[in-house]
Length: 122
Image (cartoon, rainbow, N blue to C red; front, side):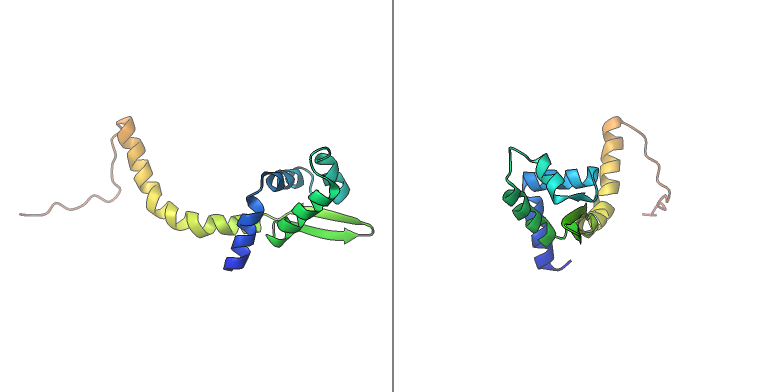
C-alpha cells in the first residue's frame, strides 16, 4: 500500500460510526444507501451517512456500484488484510516463539527443543 492509501484507510477506521457502517455492510452485503441510512436513523442524517461513505470509499474499505437509481454497497476487507500482513508477519516471526516460551515457563511446562544443541568442549 502507498502511504497516502494507508493514511486514508486508517483515517476511515478512526471513526466509530464508520466502523459500525462497515459492520452493517458485513451483515448486509450489497445493501443500498437508503437501507444504511435507516440503520443510523435518529443518529446521522442522510447527508452525514453519505459523508462517512465518502471517507470509507477513499480508504478503499467500501465498494459501491450504481444500479438504476440505487447505489449498492459492499465491505472491502483487502486494505485491512494488507495492513495485517504488513506488520504481523515480521512481528509474528519474532514474537511467537518468545511468547510461547513465556507461556510454557509461566505454566511450569517442560520444553524440549526439536534441534538440540551440541555440547561444547571446554
